Amino acid sequence: MLLILSTAGAVAVLTWANRITFFRLFCIPVFIGLILQFRERYTLDQNDPLLNNIRIAALLLFLFAVISDGVDGFLARFKNQKTLLGTILDPIADKLLLVSATIALSLPIGLKYQIPSWLTVTIVSRDILILLGALILFIIVGKVKFLPHFLGKLTTCSQMVTIVLVLMQAGSCTFFFYLTLSFTILSGLYYIYREAKSAGLNNNQVTV
Picture 1 (spheres, rainbow, N blue to C red):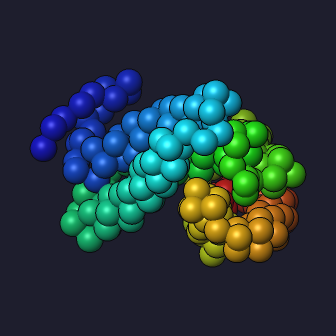
Picture 2: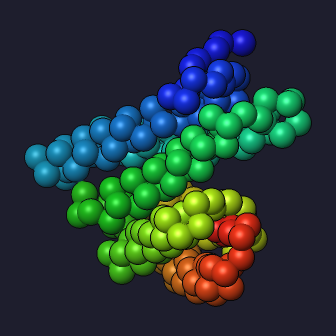
């Protein structure tokens, strides 16, 4: 196993689970690059034969990144590779991947089906709200715990499916726009409720 030193001087183990997480982070700029390449080629020639290949490459890369999330989670939980580094990096990698892909696919890049701006604004606003709430609680009590909740997991899954369907240019993605919107709002409202309830507790927990 490869060892790295944290800023606090503690030793963290860079396990295979963490390496996969770093790979997922690396996939983000590559994915954005493919989307920008698609947009550039579409602007120059809407009949460019490479457009479909670029779109499929972006789809496969995103699917690979999503699958890698399950793999590193499996390694961390069932192969005793859970570390503080992974606990911090994994949700950051997931969030950056989803938000980056959502924003990129809401831009006018030449796709028939694209993520509507109102959905992108809702998703980003929810995430900002969660971060601000966590920051406020941390300032007040000095400790915040991030615990998953089924509404947060449903929101994440619906976002992933929506992105995949948009990259596939499937007509059914329209339904998932509204489904994702519903989950995003519900999980955001639950977040407000949970934080209002936990604000007075000593052991504060942020549900995402």
